[in-house]
Every structure is written in structure tokens, then in C-alpha cells.
View (cartoon, rainbow, N blue to C red):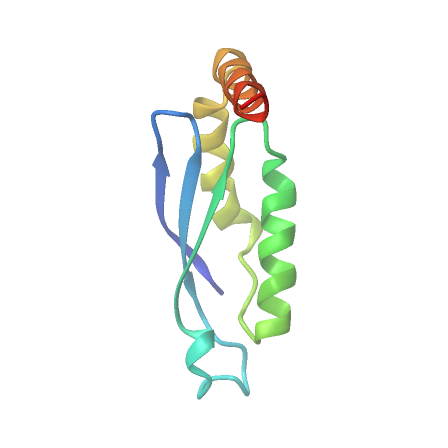
Length: 100
């Protein structure tokens, strides 16, 4: 199984995740199936959908899924980081950027 290696919460509330990829059987020789994969989720993002997106991408690559018990770590951090206040501040920031 692929595993969560690092979770960071940025000052903005963005949650960054580093995943250790593990190749599926038959893909062990493919260098793209090993190493790390990174992703970030902004405040208010659908955290469950983030897991789905990564697993869909990994399936095409020949990389093992991130299991729910691993993704639960990301959900726990995101629930701490993505408070109502942080989500509102992020939305205001995004709106201000779109006016520029």
C-alpha cells in the first residue's frame, strides 16, 4: 500500500501531503511507481475527494492505492486546519485575487 509520509499545514491553511508510492505487482521496474507524490488541498476542499483523485491517478500509473486508514491521518489534520475562520479567510483571499 502507498502510505502518507508527511503532512504540513501552511499559514494559509493549505494542507500539503507527501505520499510514499508503492508499485503494484508487475510495475516494480517502473521508476514512476516509486518515490514520493505530493498534493495540496486548500481550505474548504473536499478531503475525501482528494483521496479519490490520487487513487484514480495511481491506478493509471500502476501504483497501489492509499488506504482509508492512511488517509484518515490527512482528514484529521485537515479538520484541525480548515476551521470556518480559515475557510472564510481563504475565500476572501481568492476573491481578492480574482479582482486583480
